Image (cartoon, rainbow, N blue to C red):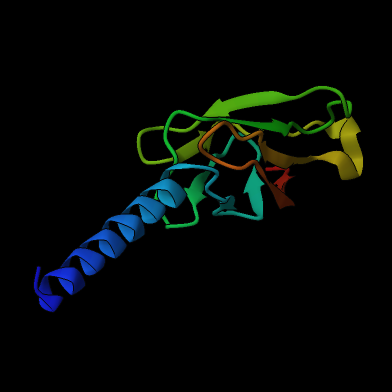
Length: 129
């Protein structure tokens, strides 16, 4: 074989390896993050959020757990992301006896084989009408 043929084979092998590594990283153990569009919502209002991967794509059909206003620490509620990775919390509850605990918080995605878990550190405070 000619010297140029060897170089071409080496370049093709390197290209195949690079594509394989990229596809593996893109499809396995991808970091995620949650964004929420509000920090405050009025009673009976709604707010939404999105679960995104490190490539800024929405992560569809995943469960997001969170605490509702006034609920004990062990009580979690679920929301499921749609085909775009978005989720909506409707009819926000305001509980008069909850005081400073009138917020939705600790939004968490547990992760799975393809995506790493994540947590939203902020809260969404519910304001009385």
